[in-house]
Figure 1 (cartoon, each protein chain N blue to C red):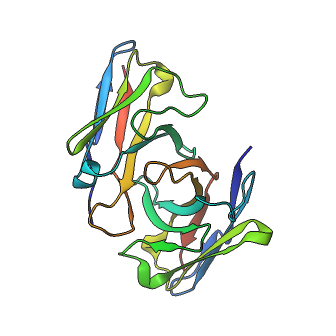
Figure 2 (figure 1 turned 90 degrees about the vertical axis):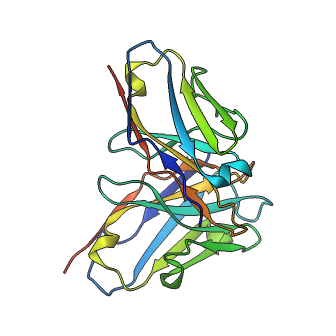
Length: 121
Length: 109
């Protein structure tokens, strides 16, 4: 049974760096073909893909946010960490991590519950 | 980067069939995946690949694709199908990116 859970601060100030951790179980990020992605959703708006990391440490970033994002993995801890620098109120959103089964494209078949991050002074 | 375009809102009478579409150049190269999201909940994968349903997804959900358009069809819509639906795929411009559509709000009348 695959589960994922996001953790991190619920409130950050403008210009600060956000660090979110995705802790998962039921799969290993050292298994060929496996990936974990981050997706966010501002209140009342659409899903937006942020970043992906694969078992072989291949990393992919949204072109519009690439300069602000870093994704890393700790296989021994079953965790994926996303950092986003220079936070702004427009970054207020629910942040999800999801398992990518990487079959026929990018397929997020399991999602975490999401964590709401508010950016405000 | 590529974009995926969805109609903002679609409605269907209870028990009828509805098609939700997703358009984009990347769909000529990659299959779309479809996600259902109900208020306050995380998205749930309902269709992926050519026309695959994850375990637990009712068979009234099906997917298809033609040219630059992917479609999610709900045959015999139920009240519990009222939700937002999102498509996603890889970017087709040779870039290693992922794109999501803007979402379609489905109302079951």
